Length: 227
Image 1 (spheres, one colour):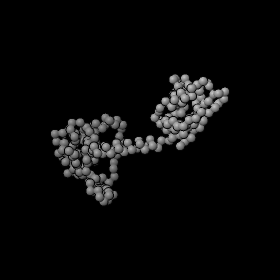
Image 2 (image 1 turned 90 degrees about the vertical axis):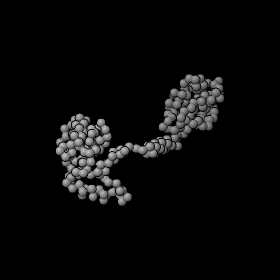
Image 3 (image 1 turned 60 degrees about the vertical axis):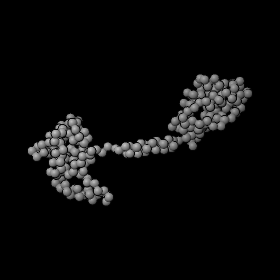
Image 4 (image 1 turned 30 degrees about the horizontal axis):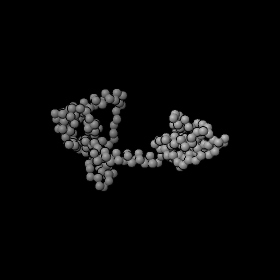
């Protein structure tokens, strides 16, 4: 259950912390947690050991823990207008939206995300990822695929080329174009998602290596257009 402390710059606020720490080492148990840091930061100075012994001992313990974590030499920091907390509180209240009824001095020690908030955050991240993928640039490519000679089976060459499957790669229409001496090359269209497919890697690592290089001698990019 959440614990709430209010007005820690007042005697009543410090007394509530002192009473809470009776029989305890730290705010939420036997180990230092972010709850202690929140309360520590809201208290202006070390509580009196005579009036608030529990709070004073706890304050010293937290100070020691923080000192070991931040070994640099502190020169000290002071905040103006600390003598008029009521005026500062009034200014905060005036700046708050009209429908905000929460006390600015209240400290919610258990502000972890609820299951609903976690699910909402996950849904937002998924939507962002989906949008990013949709917005990824696409390109239309026209490629020449050349056989070894006039005896190469061009039907099997095309089947071998189209057998290459990759995320972000879509093969399109193709046609045979005479080169000379009875040899024909295949021109084929393909659409790629730029973020996922590199045409150079497609040629070097997939289309001109075994077993496809049994039919394909080389590939050249004829046209490359952004969509």
